[in-house]
Image (cartoon, rainbow, N blue to C red; front, side):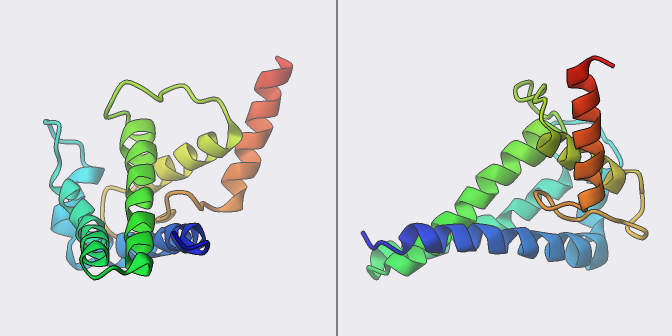
Amino acid sequence: MYWWGPIVLIFTFLFMEFSAWATHKYVMHGFMWKYHKDHHIEEPGVFEKNDIFFLIYAIPSWLCIMLGVIYDSSLSIWIGSGIATYGLTYFLFHDVYIHRRMSWLRNIDHPFFMAIRKAHKVHHKYRSKEKGECFGMLIVPFKYYREAKKAYRTKQSGT
């Protein structure tokens, strides 16, 4: 194992936030809106057409890991693992915590999580592909962190 592997994984993970932001803003709210629309307009059922977007990152992750193993490329494996780690984080934050698609992780009381949830709610207040804001998942406008921190302090002090 190379010492730089975890650094590559972390760099890839961070890069994925910007990649996901751009994909969300320009692809999902652009030419592939017909697959993302059901995420903004609640429809019955467990799955959404929008769920197909996980393939945009799952396939490159799988290919990087698989080809890295086949061709003995640690770099490829670490990159694929970084993409997969972001995918797992996305699933836990977006589907489980924010959209409550599963019953666990509902009551996390911390300003960071509160800010992310608020920014996502702001994103979903628009039902069309235009006028969107807050396209990221983990990096959101600082004003939401400030608001969440203030609300958290108020809640902690009991006032």
